Image (cartoon, rainbow, N blue to C red; front, side, top):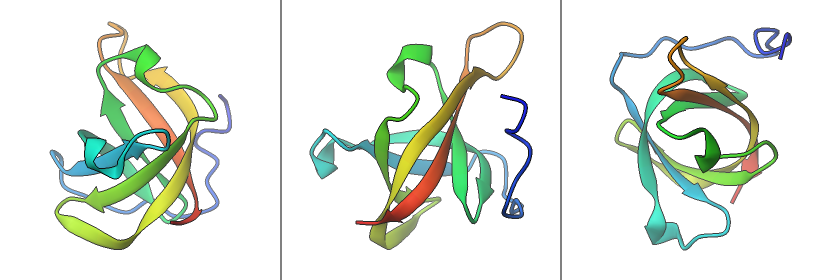
Length: 102
């Protein structure tokens, strides 16, 4: 976990409250969910989940949309970490790395 902040790509500024549309690789594309964006860079994103067990390390996802920008080609991504957002453990930060286009 110590290299979470060692980034190959620069983080981008974004407005609080932005959303990302995510689909799990084993689901139909129409079974997406929306999540609040936490962090965005050229190499990946992180978003907020209310359940630690909703995502797991190595799980494959598709990023379909970022803040109303529908991506022409969905981005394939892989979960790299799930960690608590605060000391209460109510919300979790899910970090994913982009691995290509669909």
